[in-house]
Amino acid sequence: MSSHANNPKPQITRAYVKPDDLPEVNGKYITEKSLSGLTWFRVGGAADVIYLPTDADDLSAFLKNLAADIPVTVLGAGSNTLARDGGVRGVVIRLGSGFADIACDGETDIRAGAGALDVRVASTAAGAGLSGFEFLSGIPGSIGGAVAMNAGAYGRETADVLVRVEAITLDGDKRELTPDALNLGYRTNGYPDPIIYTAAVFRGVPADANVITAQMDEIADKRGTTQPVKSRTGGSTFKNPGGASPNGPKAWKLIDDAGCRGLRVGEAQVSELHCNFLINHGNASAADIETLGETVRQRVLETSDIDLDWEIRRIGEVADGA
Ligand SMILES: Cc1cc2nc3c(=O)[nH]c(=O)nc-3n(C[C@H](O)[C@H](O)[C@H](O)COP(=O)(O)OP(=O)(O)OC[C@H]3O[C@@H](n4cnc5c(N)ncnc54)[C@H](O)[C@@H]3O)c2cc1C
Image (cartoon, rainbow, N blue to C red; front, side, top):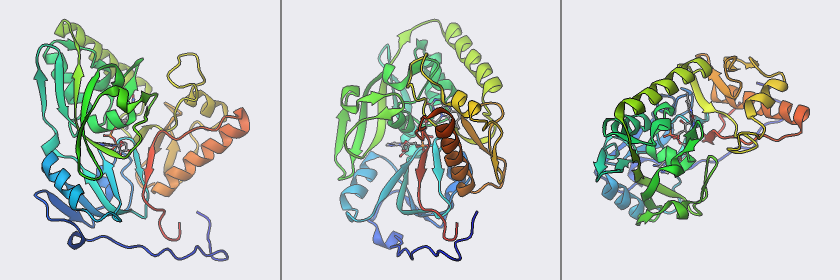
């Protein structure tokens, strides 16, 4: 990274938050923990405080009693998030085991906590002989992340199976919302206010469990050969400019055409296998990864006149001196 010796950055005054500044909760506060262990990229500084609520009531009480000027950031499985090296000010809320239950509800519905992994929901549905969830088997996120991002793959997306969500506003009020209210689009959720999903109800279609499992195996095979699924990555870095349309421009193709396949910044690299994936080879910093992404964006703009839009969520602050 370039030196700023002749052009010093303005001093930023940060109000670090400590557990003493926060309401009493049943859940747990963790301090001085790097977010690298909670994100797929395995990079990132520490959050001031990480809060693990025990359940929706605990989270609701926390939000009701939290001082309005303390920022909160929600993290699911961290598979679509780049946490910057300077860490995250305020409270990072992580929904863990208290939000991981998955249960069949009647003949066709499945209710899953927002902390449940997509792959577990897919396998529960398969076991119950419910089709429609196969696409989730290849997405390494949580249900909260799937609703927040309208995660999808192979022509299917979360909106296709979602019946309703349970959520909590930043004021601590519990809400039940239908997909219409969320205004889900291609990798977007258009709900107008910040909100935390705590559970979701999905509807499948009864089908032969063997057929469902075979489809999930096919998805696993396909992913294993076309995406760097075993690497430290954040999945698709940029949205396809044509959205979900099969005929629209694809981000990976634009990146390839811009000559960025395999491009490196330090230990961060554009995947050779799938150009829309960035990889941390081990010791990349978040700044390396973000710089690489911005370089790719710039090159695509120069070669194709298309300004790519980050799909990966970037959180936190750039480290001092970066
Ligand atoms: C190898 C690999 C393959 C991938 N393949 C796909 C794919 O095929 N299709 C696809 O769509 N994505 C894919 N992804 C990206 C990622 O898995 C999805 O976007 C996933 O839905 C993110 O879920 P998460 O829990 O990891 O979210 P996080 O990365 O933790 O968070 C992502 C966003 O969701 C928000 N969020 C998370 N939980 C909640 C909650 N409970 N309430 C409110 N907001 C919340 C966060 O605030 C953040 O803005 C892939 C990623 C990897 C690493």
